[in-house]
Image 1: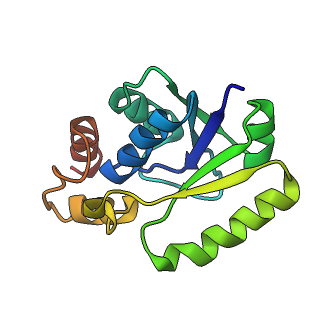
Image 2: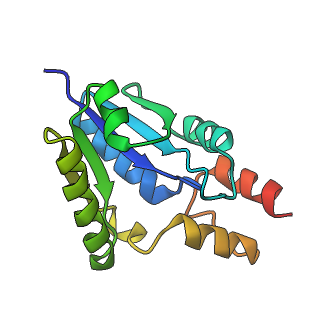
Length: 158
């Protein structure tokens, strides 16, 4: 059986914690789809096409592909014939929301299994929001994001 996992998120921007999870998921599944959410209700720093480009520029694993989606995640997963949903957990505070979402996804798509992955210890504090705040204040984010994201942040924030 070809196991396809979906790792969804806004990835605004992608950071090293995301990349850590993507790399480890890529070792565990035949295929991983990084699914970037198109959310019209939220305006991000980067547009969806920019986020797609940044992710594709930083992820170089043969079994990982990057796509965008809108609407229900479970519909996207059904279309891709995936029943495995990967979510990252940084801290206990993430768990309650992620647990509720996992239950709702299972309600909508009973075959789905949500797998929670914890990033490497050095990334447990990391979020896209923190990256944008630090970069916006001219702080050094070079150990938090890959070089293409550093360049993109410099362009956006200057």
